[in-house]
Image (cartoon, rainbow, N blue to C red; front, top):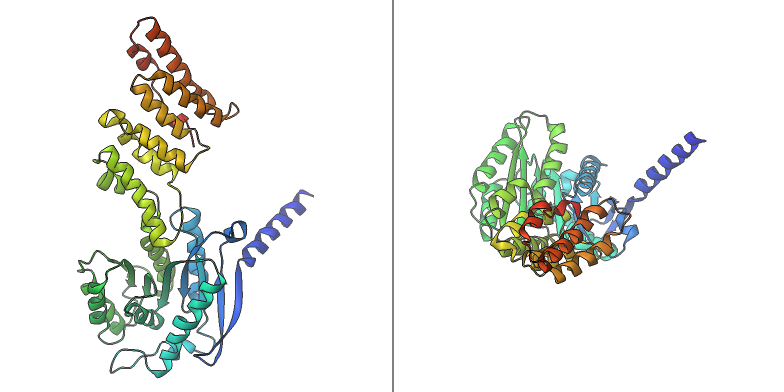
Length: 408
């Protein structure tokens, strides 16, 4: 019986995973034919239809779609990137990729045939996805070798429709490096450009990649976010997965929680007010850039806590606590910081009120409840010492508040 339950559980899990991926035959006016699409929608959409998701459009879907979806799910599960809607275009049923992504040797730009594919993606596919799925404004496009070269034509638009461009071992058209450099210098809003290569590529392809990297890595435009990976110690096949993972990490770096390196470089020397502003601004930028409405993470709150407590006599504890109460009204942590603010200011009556409010939220059944209740006991002891005319400093020394026991 136990084995039967396990089998049913695994089957239900597999079905759930399969239901998040759909195949669609798309009848294209531009191409005058049907194209096969493979579409992944995160399972969370079924749980909350108010969610919106960045979109990734994947060329060469036969090879790259599953690799990208697997990595996007992993990064989302680890809270390193938002969940994404992934749309793959099949281009290797009858070697369509060669006509889809061809270009003129004279101009290095799409020819008459490939311009039709460009129109299909730009004017048919993207509107269809936006009209039928809960998309945010952030869009990524991914290609490999010949299809990687083609994604750059979308980058050359006056206002590029894609925000991130993932070029895996691209077979660049003539003078592509010069066109890319010129475009990178003119950007007035933020775009991400990822490039990978390795010595397993042909000599011609490697020359194009190196020429491009040598120019783009010198860009001083802050709106042009650029990253290059050399996978010469790997293989062409392995580089597909390695590039995909690295590109997602690079593109969504700002989405992830504050790292130790980021804290040491940008936050550690800040005053409390600036640290709070940095934290709030980071999440405003996440929503603006990726369209993901993410509340400030608990781990990021704890990251800047020492600055708030230790600097400027804890003057910003109240502001910090109020911010947390807006984000997590059912959490005791906001009351804890406000209570600590009043406690350090010797306003024990107000401190006791907030500690009691926090304790009511945490509940006696919570394993951290005893640790939180110690705040109440400490303040009561200070009130008693104050009434008796004793110094409250001895009480402070005996029972330092510990935020790690407060818990969100």
